[in-house]
Image 1 (cartoon, rainbow, N blue to C red):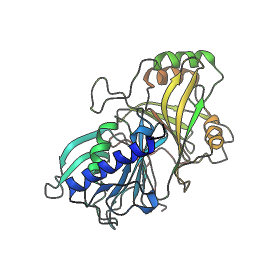
Image 2 (image 1 turned 60 degrees about the vertical axis):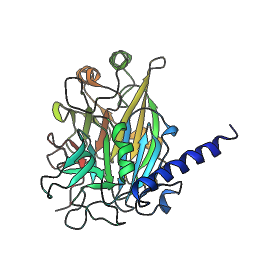
Image 3 (image 1 turned 90 degrees about the vertical axis):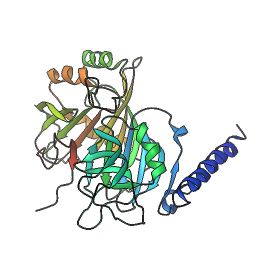
Image 4 (image 1 turned 45 degrees about the horizontal axis):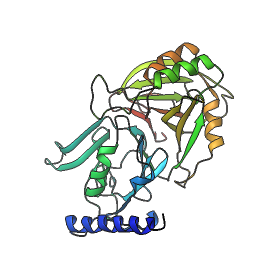
Length: 334
Protein backbone atom coordinates (compact mmCIF):
# COMPACT_ATOMS: atom_id res chain seq x y z
CA UNK A 1 0.00 0.00 0.00
CA UNK A 2 2.96 2.31 0.55
CA UNK A 3 3.71 2.55 -3.17
CA UNK A 4 0.09 3.22 -4.21
CA UNK A 5 0.39 7.04 -4.35
CA UNK A 6 3.49 6.73 -6.55
CA UNK A 7 1.76 4.25 -8.84
CA UNK A 8 -1.34 6.45 -9.12
CA UNK A 9 0.81 9.51 -9.79
CA UNK A 10 2.62 7.56 -12.50
CA UNK A 11 -0.68 6.56 -14.15
CA UNK A 12 -1.96 10.13 -14.03
CA UNK A 13 1.31 11.44 -15.42
CA UNK A 14 1.16 8.90 -18.23
CA UNK A 15 -2.40 9.88 -19.07
CA UNK A 16 -1.44 13.53 -19.03
CA UNK A 17 1.49 12.87 -21.34
CA UNK A 18 -0.76 10.92 -23.68
CA UNK A 19 -3.24 13.80 -23.68
CA UNK A 20 -0.51 16.26 -24.57
CA UNK A 21 0.82 14.01 -27.30
CA UNK A 22 -2.59 13.38 -28.85
CA UNK A 23 -3.99 16.87 -28.57
CA UNK A 24 -0.99 19.08 -29.11
CA UNK A 25 -0.69 19.95 -25.42
CA UNK A 26 -3.89 22.01 -25.41
CA UNK A 27 -6.12 19.63 -23.44
CA UNK A 28 -4.54 17.53 -20.71
CA UNK A 29 -5.18 15.43 -17.63
CA UNK A 30 -3.96 17.13 -14.47
CA UNK A 31 -4.01 16.54 -10.72
CA UNK A 32 -4.81 20.16 -9.86
CA UNK A 33 -7.80 21.06 -7.68
CA UNK A 34 -10.94 22.06 -9.56
CA UNK A 35 -10.46 25.74 -8.71
CA UNK A 36 -7.00 25.76 -10.32
CA UNK A 37 -7.88 24.09 -13.62
CA UNK A 38 -7.09 26.16 -16.70
CA UNK A 39 -9.19 26.05 -19.89
CA UNK A 40 -8.93 22.58 -21.43
CA UNK A 41 -7.61 20.89 -18.29
CA UNK A 42 -9.38 18.04 -16.51
CA UNK A 43 -8.97 15.32 -13.88
CA UNK A 44 -10.23 11.75 -14.12
CA UNK A 45 -10.00 9.15 -11.33
CA UNK A 46 -12.59 6.37 -11.95
CA UNK A 47 -10.90 4.04 -9.46
CA UNK A 48 -12.65 5.97 -6.68
CA UNK A 49 -15.95 4.33 -7.67
CA UNK A 50 -15.69 1.68 -10.36
CA UNK A 51 -19.34 0.95 -11.19
CA UNK A 52 -22.87 2.23 -10.76
CA UNK A 53 -25.08 5.10 -11.95
CA UNK A 54 -23.48 8.35 -13.07
CA UNK A 55 -24.60 11.96 -12.65
CA UNK A 56 -23.12 15.02 -14.37
CA UNK A 57 -23.31 18.45 -12.73
CA UNK A 58 -22.42 21.57 -14.70
CA UNK A 59 -21.64 24.81 -12.85
CA UNK A 60 -22.12 27.69 -15.27
CA UNK A 61 -20.61 30.22 -12.90
CA UNK A 62 -17.38 28.25 -12.59
CA UNK A 63 -17.40 26.83 -16.14
CA UNK A 64 -16.76 23.41 -14.64
CA UNK A 65 -18.45 20.02 -14.91
CA UNK A 66 -18.31 17.38 -12.17
CA UNK A 67 -18.92 13.66 -12.77
CA UNK A 68 -20.19 11.51 -9.90
CA UNK A 69 -20.63 7.75 -9.76
CA UNK A 70 -22.54 6.41 -6.76
CA UNK A 71 -22.18 9.80 -5.11
CA UNK A 72 -18.39 9.78 -5.44
CA UNK A 73 -16.69 12.32 -7.67
CA UNK A 74 -14.67 10.56 -10.36
CA UNK A 75 -13.92 13.49 -12.63
CA UNK A 76 -13.93 17.25 -13.06
CA UNK A 77 -13.29 19.32 -16.16
CA UNK A 78 -13.35 22.81 -17.51
CA UNK A 79 -16.20 23.49 -19.95
CA UNK A 80 -17.51 26.16 -22.27
CA UNK A 81 -21.26 26.73 -22.10
CA UNK A 82 -23.62 28.86 -24.20
CA UNK A 83 -22.60 32.43 -24.93
CA UNK A 84 -24.85 35.48 -24.57
CA UNK A 85 -28.03 34.98 -26.55
CA UNK A 86 -27.49 31.20 -26.60
CA UNK A 87 -27.30 30.52 -22.86
CA UNK A 88 -27.29 26.90 -21.76
CA UNK A 89 -30.61 26.22 -19.99
CA UNK A 90 -30.43 25.55 -16.27
CA UNK A 91 -32.36 22.76 -14.60
CA UNK A 92 -32.42 19.01 -14.13
CA UNK A 93 -32.34 17.04 -17.36
CA UNK A 94 -31.61 13.46 -18.41
CA UNK A 95 -29.71 11.86 -21.27
CA UNK A 96 -31.93 9.78 -23.55
CA UNK A 97 -30.02 10.19 -26.82
CA UNK A 98 -26.33 9.63 -27.44
CA UNK A 99 -24.36 9.79 -30.68
CA UNK A 100 -20.66 9.01 -30.88
CA UNK A 101 -20.29 11.43 -33.80
CA UNK A 102 -23.11 13.88 -34.47
CA UNK A 103 -23.06 16.56 -37.16
CA UNK A 104 -25.13 19.68 -36.58
CA UNK A 105 -27.83 20.26 -39.18
CA UNK A 106 -28.23 23.81 -37.87
CA UNK A 107 -24.62 24.96 -37.83
CA UNK A 108 -22.96 24.02 -41.15
CA UNK A 109 -22.65 20.32 -40.43
CA UNK A 110 -20.29 21.06 -37.53
CA UNK A 111 -18.85 17.95 -35.87
CA UNK A 112 -20.07 17.22 -32.32
CA UNK A 113 -18.06 14.22 -31.05
CA UNK A 114 -19.43 12.22 -28.10
CA UNK A 115 -22.79 14.00 -28.11
CA UNK A 116 -25.13 13.38 -25.18
CA UNK A 117 -28.33 15.35 -25.75
CA UNK A 118 -30.20 16.58 -22.70
CA UNK A 119 -32.49 19.37 -23.97
CA UNK A 120 -33.52 19.91 -27.59
CA UNK A 121 -30.29 20.45 -29.50
CA UNK A 122 -28.26 21.05 -26.32
CA UNK A 123 -25.72 18.35 -25.60
CA UNK A 124 -22.59 17.53 -23.72
CA UNK A 125 -19.92 17.04 -26.38
CA UNK A 126 -16.28 17.65 -27.25
CA UNK A 127 -15.70 21.20 -28.45
CA UNK A 128 -13.78 24.44 -28.14
CA UNK A 129 -12.63 25.59 -24.69
CA UNK A 130 -11.51 29.24 -24.81
CA UNK A 131 -12.06 29.78 -21.08
CA UNK A 132 -15.45 31.49 -21.28
CA UNK A 133 -18.99 30.71 -22.55
CA UNK A 134 -18.69 30.39 -26.33
CA UNK A 135 -21.12 27.74 -27.61
CA UNK A 136 -24.60 27.90 -29.13
CA UNK A 137 -26.03 26.34 -25.97
CA UNK A 138 -24.17 23.05 -25.72
CA UNK A 139 -21.67 22.24 -22.98
CA UNK A 140 -18.23 21.78 -24.56
CA UNK A 141 -15.85 19.28 -22.99
CA UNK A 142 -12.19 18.44 -23.68
CA UNK A 143 -12.08 15.72 -26.34
CA UNK A 144 -10.36 13.11 -24.20
CA UNK A 145 -12.66 13.80 -21.25
CA UNK A 146 -15.70 13.47 -23.52
CA UNK A 147 -14.31 10.15 -24.77
CA UNK A 148 -13.98 8.90 -21.18
CA UNK A 149 -17.42 10.10 -20.11
CA UNK A 150 -19.38 8.79 -23.10
CA UNK A 151 -19.22 5.04 -22.34
CA UNK A 152 -20.00 5.27 -18.62
CA UNK A 153 -23.27 7.20 -18.83
CA UNK A 154 -26.51 5.28 -19.13
CA UNK A 155 -29.99 5.78 -20.44
CA UNK A 156 -31.53 8.31 -18.05
CA UNK A 157 -28.28 9.73 -16.66
CA UNK A 158 -29.15 13.05 -14.98
CA UNK A 159 -27.46 16.19 -16.30
CA UNK A 160 -27.86 19.00 -13.80
CA UNK A 161 -27.04 22.50 -14.98
CA UNK A 162 -26.89 25.16 -12.26
CA UNK A 163 -25.31 28.53 -11.67
CA UNK A 164 -23.96 27.40 -8.29
CA UNK A 165 -22.28 24.14 -7.42
CA UNK A 166 -24.37 21.28 -6.06
CA UNK A 167 -23.75 19.12 -3.01
CA UNK A 168 -23.76 15.33 -3.32
CA UNK A 169 -24.07 12.61 -0.71
CA UNK A 170 -25.39 9.09 -0.12
CA UNK A 171 -28.54 8.12 1.76
CA UNK A 172 -29.76 4.79 3.13
CA UNK A 173 -33.50 4.56 3.50
CA UNK A 174 -36.21 1.93 3.27
CA UNK A 175 -38.88 2.09 0.62
CA UNK A 176 -38.88 4.61 -2.21
CA UNK A 177 -37.32 7.26 0.05
CA UNK A 178 -40.95 8.36 0.38
CA UNK A 179 -42.07 5.92 3.08
CA UNK A 180 -40.94 2.98 5.18
CA UNK A 181 -44.11 2.06 7.03
CA UNK A 182 -45.57 -0.66 4.80
CA UNK A 183 -43.31 -3.72 4.83
CA UNK A 184 -45.33 -5.49 2.14
CA UNK A 185 -44.70 -2.64 -0.28
CA UNK A 186 -40.99 -2.69 0.53
CA UNK A 187 -40.85 -6.46 -0.04
CA UNK A 188 -42.58 -6.06 -3.40
CA UNK A 189 -40.29 -3.28 -4.54
CA UNK A 190 -37.21 -5.18 -3.37
CA UNK A 191 -38.29 -8.22 -5.35
CA UNK A 192 -38.77 -6.20 -8.51
CA UNK A 193 -35.36 -4.55 -8.11
CA UNK A 194 -33.31 -7.74 -7.72
CA UNK A 195 -31.30 -8.62 -10.80
CA UNK A 196 -31.94 -5.34 -12.61
CA UNK A 197 -29.08 -3.43 -14.16
CA UNK A 198 -28.59 0.09 -15.43
CA UNK A 199 -30.66 0.89 -18.53
CA UNK A 200 -29.00 0.61 -21.91
CA UNK A 201 -27.74 3.55 -23.93
CA UNK A 202 -30.17 3.02 -26.79
CA UNK A 203 -33.95 3.03 -27.06
CA UNK A 204 -35.66 -0.33 -27.17
CA UNK A 205 -37.73 -2.82 -25.26
CA UNK A 206 -35.05 -3.21 -22.60
CA UNK A 207 -34.49 0.54 -22.15
CA UNK A 208 -36.56 1.43 -19.10
CA UNK A 209 -35.19 4.73 -17.83
CA UNK A 210 -37.53 5.86 -15.04
CA UNK A 211 -37.74 9.33 -13.54
CA UNK A 212 -40.28 10.67 -11.10
CA UNK A 213 -41.24 14.30 -10.62
CA UNK A 214 -43.17 15.40 -7.54
CA UNK A 215 -44.55 18.93 -7.70
CA UNK A 216 -45.35 20.71 -4.47
CA UNK A 217 -47.31 23.39 -6.32
CA UNK A 218 -49.58 20.82 -8.00
CA UNK A 219 -49.37 18.16 -5.29
CA UNK A 220 -48.87 15.63 -8.05
CA UNK A 221 -46.51 12.82 -8.93
CA UNK A 222 -45.59 12.30 -12.57
CA UNK A 223 -43.57 9.27 -13.64
CA UNK A 224 -41.77 9.23 -16.99
CA UNK A 225 -40.38 6.17 -18.72
CA UNK A 226 -38.10 6.60 -21.71
CA UNK A 227 -39.26 10.19 -22.01
CA UNK A 228 -42.96 9.39 -22.02
CA UNK A 229 -45.47 10.10 -19.25
CA UNK A 230 -46.95 6.82 -18.02
CA UNK A 231 -48.25 7.69 -14.55
CA UNK A 232 -49.82 10.76 -12.97
CA UNK A 233 -51.41 10.87 -9.52
CA UNK A 234 -52.19 13.19 -6.64
CA UNK A 235 -49.96 13.07 -3.57
CA UNK A 236 -50.26 14.30 0.00
CA UNK A 237 -47.59 16.60 1.39
CA UNK A 238 -47.11 17.17 5.10
CA UNK A 239 -47.01 20.86 6.04
CA UNK A 240 -48.03 21.76 2.51
CA UNK A 241 -47.65 25.47 3.23
CA UNK A 242 -43.92 25.02 3.87
CA UNK A 243 -41.73 24.89 0.71
CA UNK A 244 -40.18 21.52 -0.13
CA UNK A 245 -37.20 22.97 -1.95
CA UNK A 246 -35.44 21.33 -4.88
CA UNK A 247 -34.03 17.84 -4.38
CA UNK A 248 -32.76 15.18 -6.76
CA UNK A 249 -32.34 11.52 -5.76
CA UNK A 250 -30.72 8.82 -7.87
CA UNK A 251 -31.14 5.16 -6.94
CA UNK A 252 -27.88 3.25 -6.62
CA UNK A 253 -29.03 -0.22 -5.53
CA UNK A 254 -30.72 -2.17 -2.76
CA UNK A 255 -29.54 -4.06 0.28
CA UNK A 256 -31.96 -7.04 0.23
CA UNK A 257 -30.90 -8.28 3.67
CA UNK A 258 -31.88 -5.07 5.42
CA UNK A 259 -34.47 -3.78 2.92
CA UNK A 260 -32.49 -0.59 2.50
CA UNK A 261 -32.44 1.44 -0.68
CA UNK A 262 -29.16 3.20 -1.34
CA UNK A 263 -29.73 6.59 -2.91
CA UNK A 264 -27.51 9.43 -4.06
CA UNK A 265 -28.92 12.84 -3.11
CA UNK A 266 -27.94 15.94 -5.05
CA UNK A 267 -28.71 19.16 -3.22
CA UNK A 268 -28.88 21.92 -5.82
CA UNK A 269 -27.18 25.27 -5.34
CA UNK A 270 -25.38 24.42 -2.10
CA UNK A 271 -22.23 26.20 -3.20
CA UNK A 272 -20.07 23.21 -2.25
CA UNK A 273 -20.00 20.08 -4.36
CA UNK A 274 -18.66 17.69 -1.72
CA UNK A 275 -21.40 17.87 0.89
CA UNK A 276 -25.14 17.80 1.52
CA UNK A 277 -27.22 17.99 4.68
CA UNK A 278 -28.44 14.40 4.77
CA UNK A 279 -31.12 14.97 7.39
CA UNK A 280 -32.55 17.81 5.32
CA UNK A 281 -32.74 15.55 2.26
CA UNK A 282 -34.42 12.75 4.20
CA UNK A 283 -36.83 15.14 5.91
CA UNK A 284 -37.94 16.58 2.56
CA UNK A 285 -38.63 13.14 1.09
CA UNK A 286 -40.44 11.96 4.23
CA UNK A 287 -43.06 14.69 3.80
CA UNK A 288 -44.38 13.07 0.61
CA UNK A 289 -47.10 10.40 0.73
CA UNK A 290 -48.29 8.67 -2.43
CA UNK A 291 -51.32 6.38 -2.83
CA UNK A 292 -50.67 2.74 -1.98
CA UNK A 293 -51.86 1.47 -5.35
CA UNK A 294 -49.24 3.59 -7.09
CA UNK A 295 -46.36 1.74 -5.41
CA UNK A 296 -46.97 -1.42 -7.44
CA UNK A 297 -46.67 0.41 -10.76
CA UNK A 298 -43.55 2.21 -9.63
CA UNK A 299 -42.06 -1.01 -8.22
CA UNK A 300 -42.39 -2.82 -11.55
CA UNK A 301 -40.39 -0.09 -13.29
CA UNK A 302 -37.84 0.83 -10.62
CA UNK A 303 -34.21 0.17 -11.50
CA UNK A 304 -30.67 1.26 -10.60
CA UNK A 305 -30.12 4.75 -11.94
CA UNK A 306 -33.78 5.76 -11.58
CA UNK A 307 -34.18 9.43 -10.71
CA UNK A 308 -36.67 11.14 -8.42
CA UNK A 309 -37.06 14.87 -8.02
CA UNK A 310 -38.97 17.06 -5.59
CA UNK A 311 -39.70 20.65 -6.54
CA UNK A 312 -41.95 23.52 -5.51
CA UNK A 313 -42.46 24.38 -9.19
CA UNK A 314 -45.68 23.46 -10.98
CA UNK A 315 -45.45 20.51 -13.38
CA UNK A 316 -46.30 22.22 -16.65
CA UNK A 317 -44.54 22.07 -20.05
CA UNK A 318 -41.99 24.70 -19.01
CA UNK A 319 -41.03 22.51 -16.07
CA UNK A 320 -41.10 19.11 -17.72
CA UNK A 321 -41.40 17.83 -21.26
CA UNK A 322 -42.10 14.34 -22.58
CA UNK A 323 -40.26 15.11 -25.80
CA UNK A 324 -36.98 16.34 -24.35
CA UNK A 325 -37.51 14.76 -20.94
CA UNK A 326 -36.81 17.71 -18.71
CA UNK A 327 -37.46 16.83 -15.08
CA UNK A 328 -37.17 20.46 -14.00
CA UNK A 329 -36.06 23.59 -15.74
CA UNK A 330 -35.60 26.96 -14.13
CA UNK A 331 -38.48 29.20 -15.22
CA UNK A 332 -37.65 32.94 -15.44
CA UNK A 333 -39.86 35.28 -13.46
CA UNK A 334 -42.43 37.14 -15.58
